[in-house]
Length: 586
Image (cartoon, rainbow, N blue to C red; front, side, top):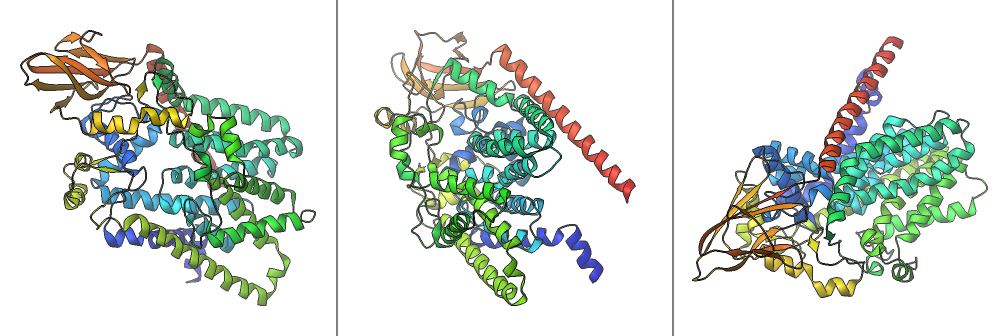
């Protein structure tokens, strides 16, 4: 038995079991209700993953235009928003063959990875194992992770950013080129805004490292090389942005009024807009302790606490966002929601609490140690219950007459039909016939929007998309060809030739043929959001649409795939070399 316990602890299997159990407990409402989470932007992302699933399944690939998801409308989404993650999720969906299984597996992985990355961070800076596990559970229960919003994907990996930062400051050996490059590349491929947060967080670590680290030259060299490798590995993201936004006026995300999406401290339970009473007390404790004990706490702890306090401040209404957003209008579309900054605050301040618990001398006495253990377990239990409640909130609508979020528009009044469509493993695209998520992000427009809410509202792209794409009444026969070309046919049953609006989107690099002839301004036109209207002959008409990227873009995408293959090969060889070296030592 002792040998078994020793083996479990040595391989961290005990930690894996605990974090896996907590993940399942948090997800119990979804498991019990057998529910699909259709909240917030989830339907938008399900469309993205369905698109890549169908591309992988059929072998019909198009890196830019959507062939199957988003009504097969040829709009561009995945190329500009986590392209490789979308293909990974499509592969998962291909294996699992069910939306319910897909959400269970990805939800579990999201919770588990967030917990283990926090545990890894804590252990990396020598926090005791028991405390590190507690910190991991605390992080798993934070609103971003527990709510399963898409920001949670980046949040799950964010503790690793602090691992990289710590290696810049604490370790004589500079930060690993391969590890930092891989981390930043994955973050950029997953969620660009999270990667920007990561860069901002790493700057103070780098500056301090350049002051304190004895190997300043190596640190600088390793950081520059990591940046160059990251740029090469993420060139697919940058070239797509240049290609699409350089040749089109593209609709940005909704320019949010930032003061309406800040975090608060008032609610008993935490949520995406409130830290809740438990985290608020923890944050207040770390803040007060940092101020009162400033001269006595270590330098690294000061740095962690200051980063946490700064991001805590800018995530709330205490920061003058009303003044800032009017001065720097672009922040309304780039940052959009200040609550996102809480991701950094959670990591830093939970870590700060861990450093305190690890080093505080009074907690080493047996009596206080036992009291501390009881208090810690009660605290973690309350957080798990709260996280479980968050899952219950997002799943409880599943068995009601409206099994979808308020931001999702139904195309049928039959709730049972919607629920049954998600159970159809033979046609995973069926739910999108009954539900519409009208995010108009990245659609081509006739003028640029600079973050003005009034101008965006006047255009009302959400309604235009709903009317012109989701509710489009032209009955199309939709077919996808091997080279990623969409072919549609329809009938003009009128007495005369006329313009008919089709649920398809045209970009500058779209190649369109109507009835076998290249489209011209005389026989085609586009709406304010790029939706095509075609001059249709009486009877049957056909249209083909294909996105043809520039030669430069094609070459860079091919080079990017080669870079990833070579990089993964180097990582594999590096791992084997280290493994063989350790085996020789043993």
